[in-house]
Length: 189
Image 1 (cartoon, rainbow, N blue to C red):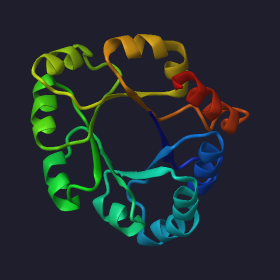
Image 2 (spheres, rainbow, N blue to C red; image 1 turned 45 degrees about the horizontal axis):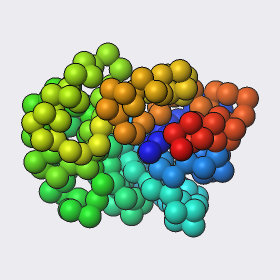
Image 3 (cartoon, helix red, strand yellow; image 1 turned 60 degrees about the vertical axis):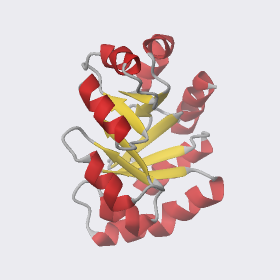
């Protein structure tokens, strides 16, 4: 599973990036627009939501529960320091909630709270995965990475226990973002 982050860029709009990611075969997009005004969310709803619906693409929002509701998105991705348990309660059982963690204790706690996937950022000790598995945590672990990191270290990340990848950078800076997405999707199939 690959999630692709769509964030402000000087080169493309959020909707253009979403279109290219979908054309490349991505089935999960995460919109990251901190401090966006309601009008911007309405624009996204008009442009990107129908594209995702028609293509069968999962749509999540980073750190903004009200935007999840406004877009009728599938769920939310939460950065470290957020409150995933409260967010699960706010959005209900049907929403997909992913949360960044920094310890095995967090993994255990969040697994009990019905969080759907756990994200580990670069520089965080990946022994968290093995420690959490020994304690019975069975939910997916997702590596936060950039496009180059995924291409260069895909096999290593699988060996560490990651089952998904949240790609935050490096796709929309390439000469052909659609081809870059397609190559990342092919890598994980």
